[in-house]
Length: 171
Image 1 (cartoon, helix red, strand yellow):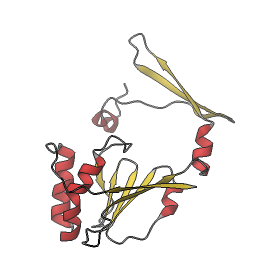
Image 2: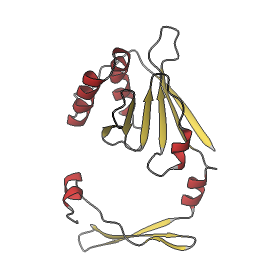
Image 3: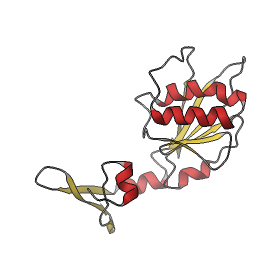
């Protein structure tokens, strides 16, 4: 029901200039996290900039934990975490990333766990179809989600920016 991928850390942690979101994440890590977790931050930023990782999103801190972060739908657990595989049964979490602290012994990297093809949520989503009504300019107006039992959801509001979403403005 689950699939996994291990992505080893590379020796090269050079990267492009930080986005505002990444700079915020780095500041939080330097302020609240221990030294071993702080050493992982350049590796995490580089790993999450890879094209293969989806959904790319904002870096968020989970609660007040020093070893738990979130990027999009991925819960990132640092150090020696227990594996909360039950989170993959909940819609907000699409992936778990387990990131042990760096050691000389090796196997330094990120272990990604995600739902496999036989996971109940994946099987249910296979039967869902989306279609979108657009206006004359081709902008989405209304999205319909249809499953095997009829409408799973009737409409979704679409926002062009996160600030539009928080103010309730509709595109």
